[in-house]
Image (cartoon, rainbow, N blue to C red; front, side, top):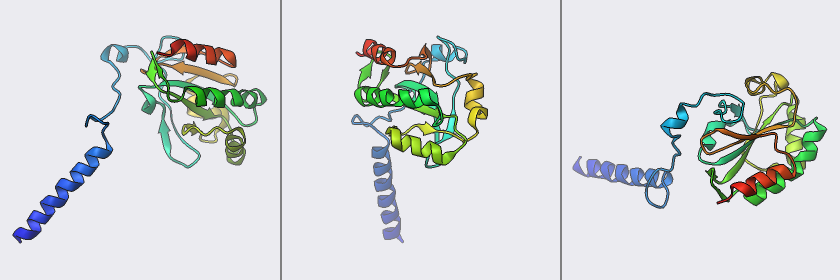
Length: 191
């Protein structure tokens, strides 16, 4: 009986050590970004200087992805669709910008991520566009409700492409950046 209890304690200690190492950075601390209290006082909205409303949608694999999970990073929230020609024309530039800035450090966040919200209704067309355009960032989301997706309603999306640049706290610092304007803004925010 004593041997079993000692073995169970040993297993519990090993399990705890393994789990804590999976959830920590090099200093042994859990790396979770906490939005400062003064920022939490800023109201939610879709205008410059307001906190972007959270979005929670499934990705192409069915895994739920939240916009707020990206706090701590500079984020481009991009609304698009596979059937939208201007969106598809913008996608190669987004790929180039993502590859260039994904691992950079910014004054407004550590790293750069794109959170793409699809306004598609056809899942096959959406998946094909992601593949064809090389949109290989992990935050391609959509619920196939088209313009009736809750995110589009919350943001008042009237036309696409439409995007919002969010700082590390989820505060909108720019809108509708396309082409060179996005590249220039990201370069301006580099540390």
